[in-house]
Length: 169
Ligand code: AMP
Image (cartoon, rainbow, N blue to C red):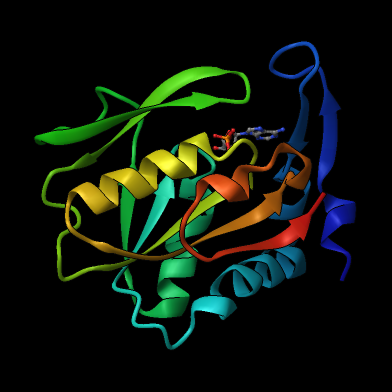
């Protein structure tokens, strides 16, 4: 089925000039949701993934289902100050502002083979920060997977690991 038809363009959200890719129509369709999760997981099957890291907020919607498909665990990469335990932080630039993400210090380690998942790859700052956090903790990042890649923003070039996207614009 045509997943792209279920992604809604919302102009000028959350700021003027940004065309927001709203994935909620896709999430609400059972067949599309199943196809999206299968499409996110398939490239990484048999690659020994131990942890799937989802990036707050919309990465949280997709990553746990991908983790289940791959027989891996799920790790939340959260906005600063949300995690209860000792966390490591990485700042990054966003298509619309700046931010930082944190993971628990014991969430990933040298024994882990990590897949990073988010809904949209834009400039690559967010996924790049997740990648940097995993590397700082000694983990191997096998790759990054996205539902949507905004190819014209060139984010893929910031990620020095294999990148797969279900849909590209
Ligand atoms: P970036 O760090 O620039 O690659 O931005 C990626 C992050 O920002 C992801 O977590 C996305 O959810 C969000 N994001 C950036 N641009 C958009 C967009 N045009 N539509 C929806 N989400 C976006």
